[in-house]
Image 1 (cartoon, rainbow, N blue to C red):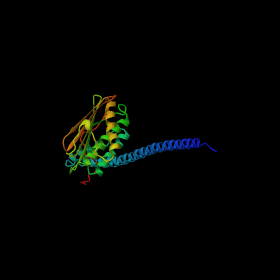
Image 2: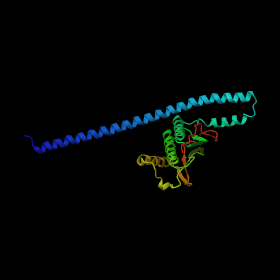
Image 3: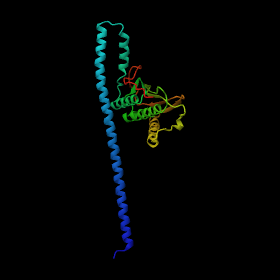
Image 4: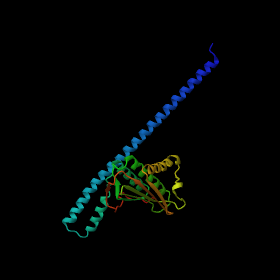
Length: 258
């Protein structure tokens, strides 16, 4: 006959090993699922970026034809419209990395879908050699996500999100402004999310703070009641940047859903 204690010990050992195997498989599957989700998201952004480039090419042909006709006909009445369309067109492509461009296109589309005016005031983007692409995308993406969410829940008739970016003396200055509810007060020590999924979105705020610290930067928050502005200053490796015209009007239509 088997010793009952030995049998129980053997069963306990088997149960423990089984639990460990299940736990390892669970975390492995979860990690793989997260990787697949990240890849799908990346492919989606790249597809949007490619569509954006195709639209850019179409608008290039339209604008070229309009400018040619204006010049050939010496049409003074169309000269102001020509200048305006050229200025707006110069801001259609930022000249940044593919990932950064894809991110901005995605946020513009999201704003348009939510009835939010997206104001693009990007003058300069950091060179890829001066900041890691992942850091640039993570910082900008998290700040824009928070701004869009605040604008959606602001209750404003004409909500907006505005992004300003420039590089000066090796410092990247990123400012993001947005509509917000006057009932919510913001400060650096109390950056709390109003989103239902607080755990995941709280990580976004942590990422912003860690990136600011990583680049020996500074973060300022200004609460204007019905709007807010977050300014980030990061020290870059180089002073180079890609410049573009200041004036810009979003190429995506604004759908008034509020």
